[in-house]
Length: 489
Image (cartoon, rainbow, N blue to C red; front, side):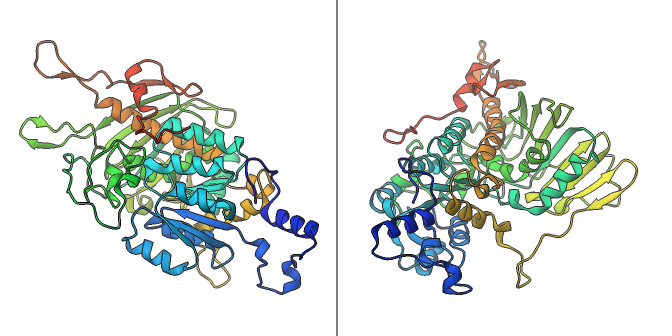
C-alpha cells in the first residue's frame, strides 16, 4: 500500500514482496487460481466519502462488482436513500460521518478514496487523503475555487498519488476521434468555441433561504458545513440544492463546465485563459427594482474567456459559455437541416477556418462539418461483452487499475483526467465564476442615487500567479475565507 513515506510500489507488489520476505505465506497469482478469480492482493481497498447521490455510482463503479474492496463508507447524512443503499450493499465496510476520524482509524487499511461530497468540501477531504498517501478520485468540479485547484494539483505530485476527476466524458473514446480530426487539420485553426447548458435545474437566483430550525437527527450539519461560513440548516441547501449558493457550490459552471469545457481543452490543448468577461440575468420581484443576491448564483449567465494561440492551435480562441437555457445561434457551417447536439440542451461547437465540430455533453456523438460540405461522424462508443454500454466509459475502473499499477506507471499516465489535466481545466471553469461574482460587486454612488458596479468589465488574468491584474477586488474570489479548524494546508 502506498503512502507518502513509502516507495511507489503498487499495493499488489508490496503485499507479495512482504509475504515472501516473511516466509509465513505466499500469494498465489490469479492465473494459477483460475479464470475469473481475483487474488486478494489484486484488490484495491477503497473508502468512499460522500456516498449518496453521485457518490453512490462513484463508489460502486470503483468497487467494480467485487474487483475491489469497499472497506469504509463515510457520509454526514445517514438518512439519504442512496446512503442507506450503499451501506446495505457493503455490509462489511466500516461506517463513519467524519472523514477525518475515518482516515485516522482506517488509514492503514485504505489504499484509495473517492470524494463525492458537495463542492465546498472536495479540497479538504482530498488533501487530507493525499497527505496520508492515498490515491483519490474527486468529483467535478475538482474544487470550489481556483486556489484549491492549484493546491490539489501540486499535492498530487508531491505525495505521488494517482488522481482522477469525475468528468467521465474525458474517458469517452469518441473524444479521441475529435482530437484526430483536429490533428489532421480538418478544422484548420479553431478561433471560436461555444459551450452551453440547460443548467441550473435547481432553484437559483432566489432570495437567501431562512434557516429551518431543527436539524434532522441523522445529519451532522456542522460537518456538512465544513470550511464554509456557518449558516443554519435548511432543506433549501441540503441535499442537492446547495449548488446555487456560493458558500457551498459553483452554480451551473461548476456542475457542467468540467464536462463540456473538457472537449476544447483536450482537442485544442488549452492552458490558462488571459481574459474573462461576463454578463448575468436579473430577477425582478418588485417593479423597477432588481433583486441583489450576492450570496447566490444567477439564473443564467454568459461568460467569454480568451485563450492565446499555441503550438497546437495557431489562432487565439474566444470561448463563449451560456447557461440557464441560453444557447448560441446556428453557426454558418452547421447545415440548416442538422439538429443541435442534445436537441440544444447541452453542447459544444468548435469553429475553425476549415470546419466545425458539434458534440453533446461528455463529448458524445461528435460530428464534423467542413466548408467543402463533407460530414463525418464518430464511431459508436464500444460496449461490454454482454452488449451493454460501459458505465461512465470505465472512468472509475481505469483509475483503480492505475492505482494498483502505481504513481507514474503507464496506466497512471494514460488516465484522461488526472489532476495535471483536471486542475488547469477546473481553474478555467472557475474563472467564469470569479467574473460572475466580480460582476455583482457594487458601491453606493456619491449622490446616494443607486450604485456603481466596478467589476463589470473585461478582467485580465495572470494564470501563473493566480491573479487578476486590472481589478484587485476580484482577487478575493480566487480563494475563500475558511471557518476555524478547516483551513486548507
